[in-house]
Image (cartoon, rainbow, N blue to C red):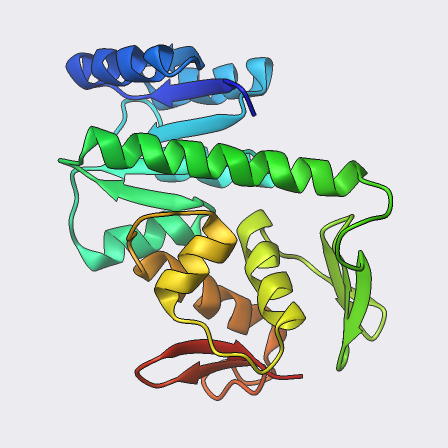
Length: 235
């Protein structure tokens, strides 16, 4: 993707302008909103390619904005917050964010994450309309049928509702059944990061996948933890 439309929802005017400047310099079209309600309406009306969303916002907090957007769209969402508690990070990912950045952050790292998220979104869009070529679009692994072109997974004929990144993670692990991947490798292969990211992002997505596909999430038989290494998928 060359450029792209990025919506920043941030009530700190200084940070908003810094983000606007850096994103514009990279060639992105930048839209802004200073509160949650305005951010939600702007996202609905302009259909951005990426939303950068602060948590602590007037009128409607970032968690609620993210929760609503995730019900309505698959747009990539990056959450920003000054909160450093682990539970805050987990909540951000649980309501549907693709990634979570804690303030203060390196602008260089944030821009790298933006590029990675937009690359990944563009690739998934391309895969959805691509006819033929590349990996098999629809395949079966054990009791799961995975339709990569439509981003759907079913078991016994019943569809399983997954977020965009949950699907991407499960598809990757299923295609590489039995192979163990570290969290850093998954950030690279699934999220598209070519730098060290917050591996908690991977853990939270695995946890939510287990609640959706495992009979007993506390004792998973499909998404298996290999202690000290990472995760693997077993049919």
